Structures are given as structure tokens and as C-alpha cells.
Amino acid sequence: MAGIIVGGPPRAVTVGTTSTLVLQANQARKSVTLVNDSTEPIYLGKADSAVMNAGIRLNAAGGSVTEVPDIFGRLYMGPWYAICTSGSMNLCVQEDY
Image (tube, rainbow, N blue to C red; front, side, top):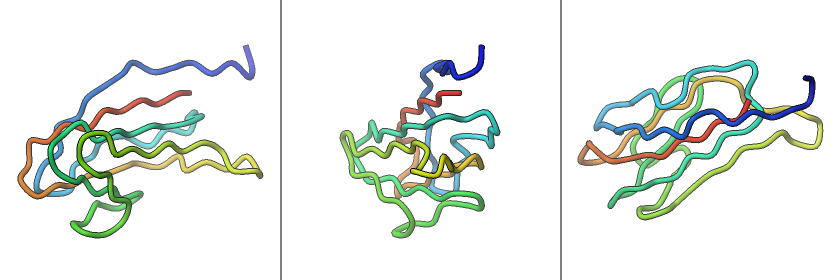
């Protein structure tokens, strides 16, 4: 059925000290929410890689970002990456498609 948004399964990704792929490209994506469920900041990068102290910063203990289509219906469909200082930090991932 066209127009129905289906929620993907909730996932957790362990973020490392090097750029970690946390969400693959998905041309069917309708929205994405990423929540930092760890004790230190996590930095996000789109398309290429994540870099410490650059890109989108998610503060510890619940920092989050949600992306939905803009007013023109555009939404980033590419991969998301994450990185953190000490490694082994938890990032909660929810993608709707």
C-alpha cells in the first residue's frame, strides 16, 4: 500500500574509535532517529565517514537527532557513520521506510 510508513526493527549499534557504519543507504527511507545511549558524546557523519569533534554531535545520555523529509519532500537516503572517544558506546537506531 502506497503511503504507509513501516517501522524497521529497533536496533543498537556499538560505536567505535574509528568511523563505524551505523545505518546503510536505503532509498525507501522515510525517517531516521539516532539516540546516544552512552556515557560520552558520539559524532555522526553522512555519506563518507564520521570525524571526532565534527559533524553532528549527540551528547551523552540521550542526545538525539531525527531526520524527516523537508518541505520539498527531500530526505537523506545515504549511509550514516558514528565515532566516539573510547569506543564500545551504544547508539540506538530507528529507521522507518
